[in-house]
Length: 419
Image (cartoon, rainbow, N blue to C red):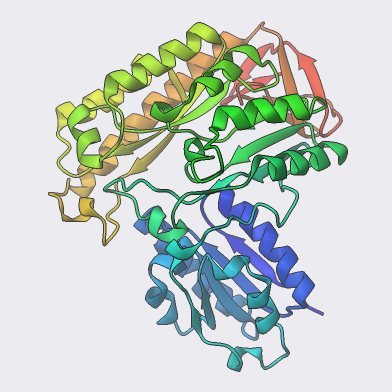
């Protein structure tokens, strides 16, 4: 029996779902297949997946190549037209056992099912949070608590790949995390597409902070809880309370900021202004002085002038950002931003490089400030772990993988701390 191979592009949620599909395909008995879980966040991500599919076909001439994920959901025809592809499956279908059972009916399954199975993702009403007990290293597990997005930012295609926002009930999340702690995990990361919308579709409309406080209360043996990414303008009072009062909630937030200029933010159809982002970071530092921020920022959004870009560049310092995810703007057909006046590609590339350089300097400055300070480090491998603020630490001797060790870093080397 040849077990299916998986190739995953994009976010942690995609990686989570690839693990779920691995289990579903294995339970169905699927053999001799390569599954490509695509990302649609940029045109470059789509290009890379197509390039990889062509290579996978050359490397696996006799295997069935099945393409799924956000890009398959938003532009199934792109993959259906590729001669290397045998099946295109939508984000809704990929989480259903019936899909994999149909594909695994035997060696001739390629001829037994429709070549393109992509239905309306907006009809999805459930997440796949119940399918697996997290994934990751033996130290850190990722737990899906939410999927989809109800917002319609003008640059973003993801709601059309993921559907509307839907939440995993708190009880299911708590049960899952309890099992993970029992299996020896020291840290759990809550993941989703639009985390701060968690609970809006559940009875009583609880909020993300309510979920975080409930987890920390009902799973007292969980050493560390981390939140993957939030929309700062939607942070609720209970979440802010948890950040300020719960030491087991890691002092590290990744913020969906996207830009630092008010006009660009309005054209993006974001729900915050520049001062809102700065105020949020200041407020969080007032309740948790050691908190560390990451952020997503887009360079070269349509109509962006040099002055507008400078506002985004200065946001790194004004908010005190450390871990930057810089995205050169990429046209996604079907979005309002695709119809706006575009910035020259060479200018976009240059602005992205300047943002990344600013981010590199911020990381170096932050790491240097950690030298000589005590930290708790979660060991991901025998010689590498991460601090509470997600800084990478390298060790000269082996440590127990999954353990939380106390260290005082002695130096900084090539983007990480040395213990």
